[in-house]
Length: 273
Ligand SMILES: NC(=O)c1ccc[n+]([C@@H]2O[C@H](COP(=O)([O-])OP(=O)(O)OC[C@H]3O[C@@H](n4cnc5c(N)ncnc54)[C@H](OP(=O)(O)O)[C@@H]3O)[C@@H](O)[C@H]2O)c1
Image (cartoon, rainbow, N blue to C red; front, top):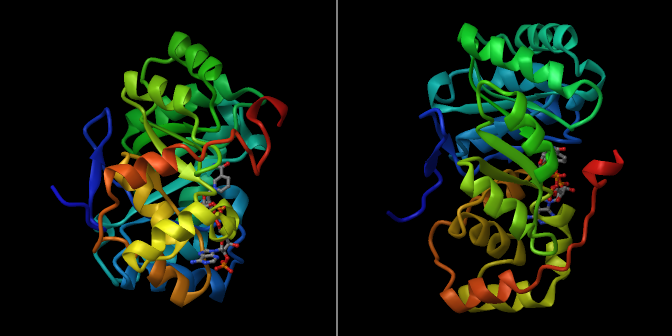
C-alpha cells in the first residue's frame, strides 16, 4: 500500500505505531511546545515523541488531549531519563510522566540510554506494561550487546529501539539484528539536525522530484521501513517536513542514499555515555 502520514507498523505485541511523527528534543516548554504539537497535529502528524528530559511532557499531554483529534488517534512516546534508571526510580518516573501528561495510558515508554541500572528499569517497564498503563515498551540507544543482555533477562521483548540514524549513520548491522528480532527502529536526529541540507547527493536527488534534501531523507527512511521523528518548532518546517507523501524515490535513488553511510555520529556513542 502507498505510504501516507497515517501509515503504521505493527509492533511485536500487535500495537500499531505511526511511522512518521514529531520530535520535541530542545523544544522549549510553554507556548513553543504547545504550538509545535498543535501545528503538527493540524498537519496530520499522528505521533509525538517526548521524554522526561525534554521538559515538555505537560505541553504534549495538554495539546494531545485538546480535541484537535481523538486521543486514541495520536501515538505518544516518552522516555525515562538516566537518573531514574532503577526498578524503583523508573516506577516513580513513570508516575511523574503520567501526572504531567494527564494520560490514563501512554502509547510507548522507552529506556532513554543503556546506562546505570537499566536492567532494573526494564523490570519496572514490564510491570507497568502488565498493569495496562502503557501500550508498548522499548529502548533507545541500545547496541546489539545491550539487546543481547536484555533478551537474557526480559520476559517481554522490546518493541522499538530508537537510535541516532540518518544518511551518514545507517547502522546496517544493528538494523538487521532488530529486524531479525522483530524490533522496529526509529531514527533520531533524522535530519542530522538540519545538516542533510548540505549533503550534495540529497540536494541533487531532491531536484528531480522538486523536494528538499530534508524531504528526500524523510521519504527514504519510510521507504526502507524506518520510523522517523523530525523535530521543528517552526510551522512552515513542521508542514513541509510532512509533505513527503506525493512522490516516491526510485530504486536507484534509494541505492544512492544507502551508499552515503560513513558511520558518522552527531551524538554520543552509547558505550561512551
Ligand atoms: N532517544 C534519544 O536519545 C534521542 C536523542 C535526540 C533526539 N531524539 C528524538 O528525535 C527527535 C529528532 O532528533 P533531533 O531533534 O535531535 O534532530 P533533527 O530532527 O535531525 O533536527 C532538528 C533540527 O533541524 C531543524 N530543522 C527541522 N526541520 C528543518 C527543515 N525543514 N529545514 C531546516 N532545518 C530544519 C530544527 O530547527 P527548528 O526547530 O528551528 O526548525 C532543529 O534544529 C528529537 O526531537 C527527539 O524527539 C531522541
